Length: 344
Image 1: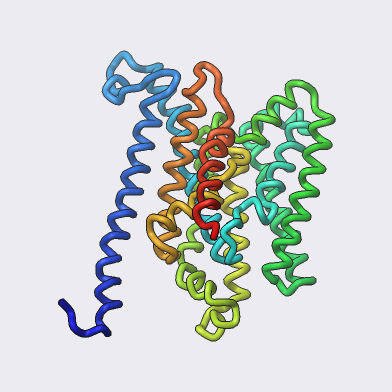
Image 2: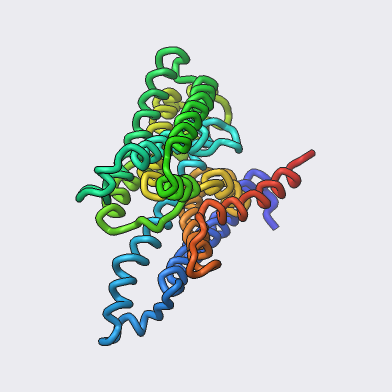
């Protein structure tokens, strides 16, 4: 038994690190297993041995052209939403923060809905595969730029101003979406509703590759601010005196999260609860340090979204239900349990 109490914290940390590494490895294994299952299971079962056979040309085309890009997009979007949610919760020091709070998802929705209702020619032309995601991305970018300009000019980019502007932008976007819903015909309304509830059914390699590069480039800087986010939990003044450039940190996290989420939802539509619930689950497993929470959120977010998409496309074959219904059905009960668990 160690008789020196000064060494106790070091011993505790030494024991904690392998446990966290093991939990992170389990999350990576869960993601790999979910990806493998999602690639093999669907309306057309595709055992990997059969795909490699000489008489499996149709299965290979379905696998490479439809299922593989869909699974890849689901994993990327889930990872981006979860990492962005974890970073925003750390920045706002608010466990209820998620990417939708700053209006990015609503802006992307408004851009996509406007294209569905007004862009008949573009959606039917040679650029149809890019028209809808580009419109959604433009909506997310415009919302982010407005948030940046307004908060910088009138609120010195304070957390309170960002939250209030995000609430206002969400409300304005909801008005615009409602107006376009009223103006749409039956076919447009079905497409619009399905996009608003989230779907990876439009995934294709020509759109997934550019979105993947954009999401990776936007989300990567978030992993390098883990220590600054940990220090920020002590308070803005304390973090500043410990060497954190607080204003720069706010700008980096807000812009990176907005760009990453905008690139993701531009293809998938709005996926609920992933950015809100996954960071809480990861903190239960790995603790509160963002050094572990951010990579853990990426792994668990990807696994959860791929699994939710697998359920969405297999639970009612040959029909397909929106992914957000599955994520909300899984996330809402957990969130209620979490509220009951922490209630004094």
